Length: 255
Image (cartoon, rainbow, N blue to C red):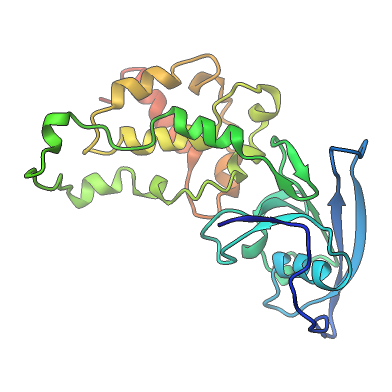
């Protein structure tokens, strides 16, 4: 389970030793008593395999136990450690310091999400929008009897939606979306991409109800097709393409 960590791990190991080091700048902000955010700087040694998350945890272990950061799996699967790294939404556990080609690494909380503290943000809006589009297969009750067979798909049918099934709900696409910053009611690229995932699934019978949900001024028509959502997905999902394909259904170009 993901955790918002603000205390040090119970370890007594010494900091990493390396001939190379970076300056790690961490945004610090507690909305309960801070008027604005500030940066704290730490000199952190690193190896070619050291990730940004590992550098942040080094700070927590040896310099400042109070840094708040959300993380869990550490292998780009859970989507917990999304943040802004050197100006771009990324997963901290998936981003190697050596690949940033910079002596300064700046980490900030994701845009378009309320801040809990420091690097940890609230995901209620993302999860509510995801739930709104009914992210599950919809079938007639009569088809779900105990003796019913599997709903088989051909490889071609699977290909229609499989990339969108790789979404890990990390929120990076919503953080990169300029419309999310200007419309607090916009459903967001993550939810729209998942709406397409089920609309395009040959086993699903809920297309009309889902299209009705997103056919709204704060839904699919609010997207300006900046494409920034697709540029930051760590799993290769293309929300911008999914949104355009959904528009094809609504405009009658797809059935």
